[in-house]
Image 1: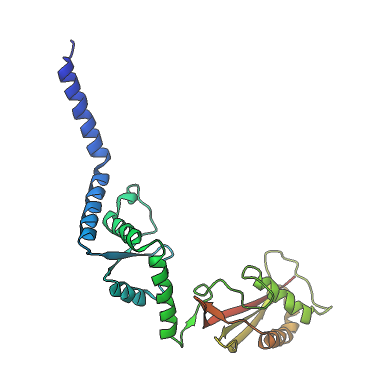
Image 2: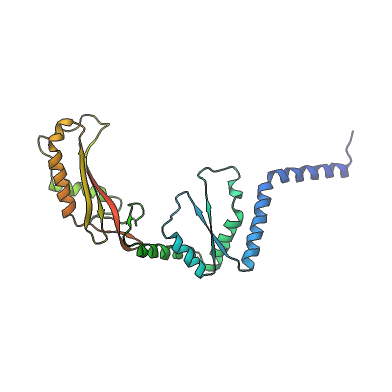
Length: 247
């Protein structure tokens, strides 16, 4: 039985529309949300969305929101899951589109500059805060080294001053390490606070060196000219460690 051309074409059209509706349902909703954002933007109803999670940098968030308000931009916050879904690219379309429109209007570096200022304000507003190593700028804490090799430099400088005793027994088990570790607060003025030191030996016969090694590392830490950590160029108090590993 032959299908008439008109009826055949109509059947194909219905099939295509049906498939597209199923395939692009999330995309249709996303496009609608984008148009909502564009309409809000047209009437200068600006809202910047902060996406939290996935390595989100929280320092200065309150100050950042205040700076946005000064620019007549409201702030919204959405928590992102570390789980990525199949149709995840169609989520938060309204917020993503509004962020894009704001960046286009005010310039590519506009938001980054506000975050930079906000983080500086946070540091100034919290002078007694002790920051973690990861929160600080990627700058070295010890002279004549780079950010990437500073811990190797610490070890090298230490052994230059304090070579291993001749009767120290080198480790025999490659899975375990011997070390002396110092944890302390490096202040914004380059001073040392709350210094604690402990040693752990793979070969227990080396325990005779515990007091000696602890004192040596203490002297090393106290007499090293440390470089204070910074956040956006401002000196801050920060947690620091010096770990000396032995063979």
